[in-house]
Structures are given as structure tokens and as C-alpha cells.
Image (cartoon, rainbow, N blue to C red; front, top):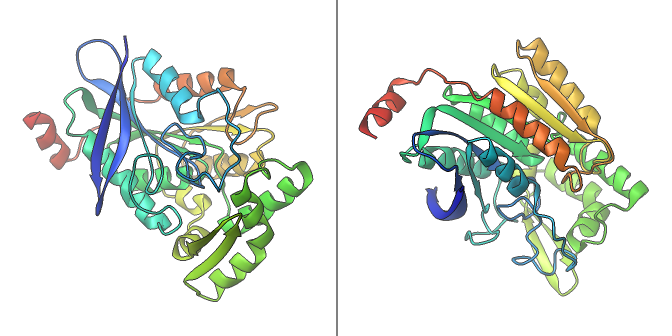
Length: 316
């Protein structure tokens, strides 16, 4: 039977908590690091209602988040995975509101590095999966890491996050999706002010929620505005699988189609999957998530290792 191991790993100045899911059987397994979408989320990919009770509606769903479901499908196919609580979420210390994008990229890089000390994992067969904002994080890490062989992008944006914010607000105005969450409603009301403050180079903006005032550090937003996945994709030469919900209210499915075109022009051969009637978190779309896992597993092929990872492999 597969097994889940609760772990922690060093990421900069903190210890992040996570779950390593390992397949049954001996030998070294292919593996993936799973990076969650934006807003505070737990390691399973769902909103962090427990750690941020005033930010999100108390209603819960019995269905696990997208990353846990993906982990379950991967382990059934013999692939291990790490999913972790970002800073200030779940069991990880820190503050989500004060953590910038570049720090989250460094944290994902540290997660990959920590897993390379595990004797159960095959250093030559590594994948990264990013959901939403995590797609830009996964791309950023993979570009600088030649041992990462496959990339999975779920609900990714392509263009500037400034443009993505405005498009998302317009779609949520139309559909009401996720507006039951106080943080979503507050950010949507304040999006133009947020963009103006970022453009003016301000460092902080406050958001009012029922019974709580949140101070948002704006450095991460500025970094996101200037780090579009579209630009990152031009520098990537790997196997890529993309999945998008057709009814995503955070990032339109056309964003994935744009990314696929840019990846193709850069010499990649991306696989594009669109889940009908599915939103950003792909609830009710397990068949599509399973198909995404199948396509990703096929592309986790052995890679040549740089000298430092060869040395690590020999020591293990």
C-alpha cells in the first residue's frame, strides 16, 4: 500500500511542513513536487480555512483539494510526490500576506533540494506541478534545474498577473464564483487600488475583512506583475502537460492555449487538456485530473544529472 509520511524541510529562515507520499515497493521511485495556487492554501491544494477562518467561508467540501487528488492518482502509477503548506498556511510558520513571489519560488526550490536527500527517490526522474500561481513558480524552478524532466501546469495564467487580476474580477462579477469568501470579495473590490499602489511603488496596502484588517505586502504583487508565465515559457525546453478548467473564474482557459503556443514555438511539444464544466480547483473533474496524471507520468523520463547531483546519487 502507498504510505504518507509527515515531514518538514528547511526553506530559507523557516521549516515548512508537508506530506511525502510514497508508492509501495522497493527501489527508487520517480517523483514530483506539487505547488499550490494563490491565496492561502493547505498542502492538499484547498483554501486554508483552518488557518484563516475569517478569510474564507466556513462551508467545507468533502472532496480533497486538487493536489491531494493528483497525488493519489500519481502514487497509483508508482510516482511519489511532495505537497507542502506554504508559509503562513496549514502547519507552516510565517505570513502568507507578507511573503513575496520570489520567496515562494525559493521555497519550492528548497523543497526539490530537500527531496534529493531521500533514498527512495530517483534523482533522474523528477517532475514539478504548479496550480494557478504555482505554475509560474514551477516554471521558474524548472528553468534553472536541468534535472527536472517534466512539468505539469494546472489553471495557469500566461500574461501579466495585472491583466489576469482584472480578467478574473470581471469573470467573478459575472458568475459570483468564490465571492462567498471575504478575502476574495475584498480583493475584487480593491483590485484597481491595489494595482495603482503597486505601480506607484508602495510597499503595503490594508484590506478590511469582518473583524480583521490585513496588511498585504505589495512586493510579491509587483514581482508577479513583471514575471508572466508567457516569458518564462520561452526559456523552457522540457516535456509539459497543461490542464485547465473550461469554467475557471481565476484564469481563462485561453491562457493555457497561449502558453501551449509559446511552448511549441520554443521547441516543446506540450499536451493540452481542457476539462469541460470545471473551475479553477477542478472539483468534480477527477477523470480529467486522472488523465493529466497519466500524461505527466509518461513524460517523467530519466535525465542526465549535473555533477553535483551525480555526487549526491553516489553518496546515497
